[in-house]
Image 1: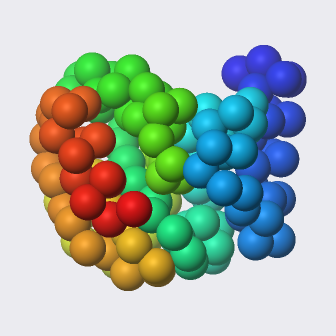
Image 2 (image 1 turned 45 degrees about the horizontal axis):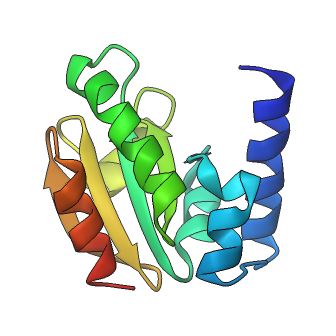
Length: 136
């Protein structure tokens, strides 16, 4: 990961922790909103999903379908008002267990801090966009 990407991710995490959220248009134009946020631990995830619509991608580096889904998730992050978060299940086993993640990729959609949808396996971008739009 480049230093620039690390700085962007850190800035987004700080914005989320401080409750700094602009309008959807501002978020789409913001460089930090175009990248998924990498979550490290339960507190980090809770801070991320506390308000708004958040798509959480539970993945593993060794998972082939997760790698296929990655560009879709990145386009969703860049092209929707929703925040997109990624959780590595190997580094966050307790978090994966808390949300009943038994296979990857698993996508959870949160609205106002509560999980409202669960999708398991490879997903198509139009389906994800439609699902997110139904909650925004």
